[in-house]
Image (cartoon, rainbow, N blue to C red; front, side):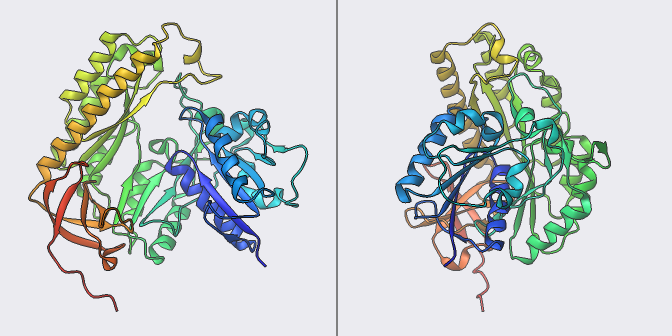
Length: 440
């Protein structure tokens, strides 16, 4: 009988793409993949170090796994595993910790599923992790996350990702296009391009061989994929040429997610970000001039060391005035081995919390305002398989979340709808315009 493996992923889209690729390795080795809440022989937990409480979350998930299968072999991989392996092996029930390089040949490390008295750590120094390993998510959702780049050469003072993932490196254009064609053949309609710093795409074996613009021009030619979506891209790397290309592209959708982190130039300097707020405003203006209906998402950090109330209000007012569509708000939390953790001017927890709430309210306001500009329009929506209170959801090209009454024939279909009204969940209720073609 096949051995059973279950997976749990914390963190970003990149982690989801990598978990999915690791899962395919297990299937090729004869394992049967089961949901996490079922008994399995081995549990793989892919961790994150960006969000807070990595230790607490990891501990809880391990405990849950062993509740379903007390003798299961538990392996921890991901950013937290690279940064703090000793902390992880102290968690009861963990059998193995694999670092950034080792997680991709996980099958080779697991010879025996017998629980050990001493957990095994396989974790090479991050500066030795310099090979790009491709990955894409598959079979679990309407859209696929395709990894095109890994690692980061930037040194933002708050960030542990270079310590957890190493230097910037990329897949070749030929390989990525081939993977996109493979995904197209599986029936997936949308690919989201992911990486740690995707605007820095093109470094192969330490040398710059191409640029992100070169990659997206080639991907735009891939038949069978209706939509390509660019995940988070740094404002200093989002060139006018990229914006212009997306505005005229057949397949790249009008949706950008651009990290800001602070609207105060003083705080941006303390963070060692590579732009000022004026450049950010220029990028938003350029996008909206070419694509008035484009959706723009923003990452912002509140409570960074030294952030005064005046700095925060500067950020708030800057965001309030910008023509953006939603915010991802992160409350700053100290990270070991970062410069920011040693900085003076610690912001009290209550102030961090208050600032976060203010920006969450602003985000809801921005999303509602953006959706209001889209009401009455006819749009193509890619519907997903989720059902909530009898409704199913999907996204338009410009990332409007629409809902209609559930119909199984609509799953993974791009369907034309009219956007009617915004509901209390800040989603748009829609009406079907075309009855989808019958599936034979």
